[in-house]
Length: 517
Ligand SMILES: Cc1cc2nc3c(=O)[nH]c(=O)nc-3n(C[C@H](O)[C@H](O)[C@H](O)COP(=O)(O)OP(=O)(O)OC[C@H]3O[C@@H](n4cnc5c(N)ncnc54)[C@H](O)[C@@H]3O)c2cc1C
Image (cartoon, rainbow, N blue to C red; front, side, top):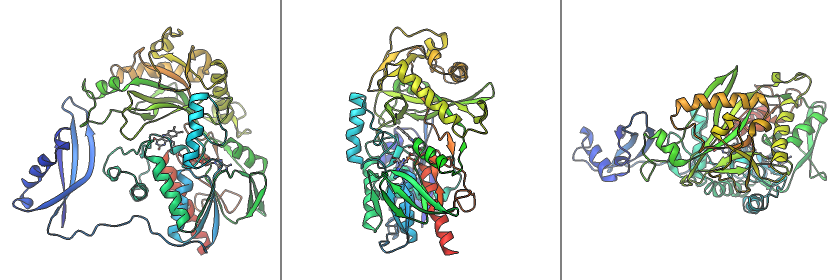
């Protein structure tokens, strides 16, 4: 038999095994008993000055045999099973492939980018020499946009079973089991690539295939049924089912679909800036003057407000992180953030973004690319303004509000470099005007947030897909072309690693259902 025991501990007590054992032994059922415990759930309650850890432990008596579940993933040989294609080896593509193996289908994954190790060299060139490889960057390559990220594993999805399965698979392939316990789990850029490689190796070991440097360049269908695809403008393959999990940055895919007459629609997304404080500043605000340490993880924040009928909110906050150059082409600047597992960099960054809807633009009903064109234009303007390299336009927060170019930029973790400019002149008014008002509001919500010591980097623009590929909510197939499964973030059905992974699995389950009928 096992028990769940809940306590409120100080951060120091939560690290102290002897203290926790003593606490448990005080409970009636464990008096004079030998027992074992492990963490079940953990969250920080920093609402008051007296910061507490909400601790939940699973406790068992030592003389009881506890049958631990050995593996979260059901292995089977699918080398001779029915084949289908997955385009993109991001979280959606990889989890789709793993789910296919569990369910007895053979996944053939085509990924335009390189394997994790080769990809790393392209990221070094991007950071040090400002060279963007359009096939291998922070968005494209093995593991997708999630590989070199903070690896925050939160989702707004209410389906606990799906969420748990996804987290369990991350653990199966090497992530720290504490992600099953933490209220806000994350993996970190240093650990994610190993997890991704372990997933790929398992897919191949089970008889699936993963092909790198393999870009989808055409899709074929007859009588509204998928018949095959083309890779790298040369190789043709026959497939009846294709999961399209190419992410929100594969603009060529949106254009390909449109050219082929496969319906797509403009979709709302969000755009703004990435703000960087020091981690100490954020810790002091969130932890009532205290700094994070071995017992208290670096603090994060989540902010949201409404300005003139539009939501403005913090996006993908990275405590102890770095701002990354996430362009997928040479003639644009894009920012996002990552952090290592320990979140031990001295900076705290977050996107602060304004929601954009297709109806913000004229002709939106006729042009599925209105939001994408807006996104592209802002990215290009930032690139041009900062000198047509990967340098990013920056401005201190108060100076942005006052419309003054910053004389001195206190710091930036963005490696390719920065240029001090007035972001009011680069960003469209629909964004800058709302950002200013939102920052004033955030300054009231978090005392100390509104400081000229915080630096804005522009733009934060790849928050979600600016295009939707419409699908049938029952079958998950494209509304007209059967056998085409628009999947996850690129198609507009996910936002973030976990929801993308879940959508990848759901698309495979939909294929299985179709094959069974
Ligand atoms: C720097 C950074 C940090 C992030 N941090 C977090 C975080 O902490 N937590 C979180 O939840 N989310 C984070 N995200 C977002 C997260 O990575 C994405 O939501 C998630 O990866 C989407 O998964 P996906 O599989 O739908 O698409 P993607 O991960 O974008 O994968 C799509 C894949 O398809 C490939 N592809 C594209 N076109 C083609 C083609 N024509 N042929 C073949 N392959 C193609 C791409 O190369 C890519 O590998 C971050 C993103 C970035 C860039």
